[in-house]
Length: 525
Image (cartoon, rainbow, N blue to C red; front, top):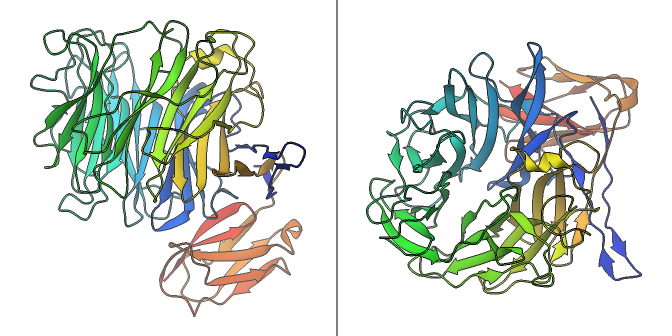
């Protein structure tokens, strides 16, 4: 285990009048960690959960497994990591995606599968305690739901948090496995019982808005709206539908039983080095059902840029693309790996990987940083770009491999929470940043290697008093008891190796006890 030294820092540079970013390695894997995802509890915005793909040595082999960590103080400290189970022998996992419902129930979807012979699927687990523990995963998609297409790649999970009859509905979009040649389509399923059972697999595209036969990976990026609509945007190239490659929006008001389609954009195709991570992301405003934004990667003759399109009429019409990155246009410096989200005030924020400070153009041998920008007008214009990464990261060929395709962010009030993978320490690890967006002020946590002093709770569950046993190194630290809403009904300072806590004054239920960086669950009967 690791000792975690918490250092709350405001890195303010007096000389230049700007702040310096602080990053936290929250994965610290020995080989590879990739494709992180963040979720924040709407009932307690101090409860943040991160999930990612990490390596684990089992049965003589390193296999990828999904790992999660939870924070209950806004990302200042994190629980020890939890792993999601493999659902079959020799399975590997990929592509975590998470969503809280409006009552604080957390869902996580992930791929668990093996090739030759192909088996497995997409599974969904639930956490009732803010990401500390997960129930038994249930299968949402099977490898053979579409016999020849293996529809289990890049699952995105979203939940309807509206106040409509659709509230609580889960949606997952997916596409064929990477080794499946086109023609391909995209797929979705719906669940109305917390992900335990799912609808029959169906296509997102349809009618006169088909993907076509030329796109190998027609990923659909999903979202739900304030008025209970399910939306998904996907690529298409069918000349009879549109002479140009296009993005279409599929929108359903009846839990995916039927869709209306509109054109988001149609533009001439430009050649992009396939090593760049060209994923696109749809996000919808939490305060206005008419507002949504699509962020994508677009190339001209020399650049690969981050472009934003927005709608103010629920997706019926869309703006022209707006360039988000503000480095000099046409200088050959590329941006990729974009993510976006709104805050509660309807401000839009965008994060991405950026090579403007590299000495080399293009992909190969070009080092990189991570940046963000804010829009106060739904993506029509953006603030000056600011750094998220605390140092320039030298190029490593591992970023050309699968598993480094996405970063993720959440935006609450004026605070940006973001996660990404980089190789600054010679390994692909997941880094977390907590940033005051308006001032570019970063709050940081430093993780130091070492042995974490152990402690235990007994009895657990308990009908009355509990005992906390600790090693000498923990004397003087604070014991904090949280309820599942993040409130702190009890706290005390450790004076002896065993501390007795009277719980008669708290209600029955599940609680969390934190000492230092470690969080454990306690049940009061």
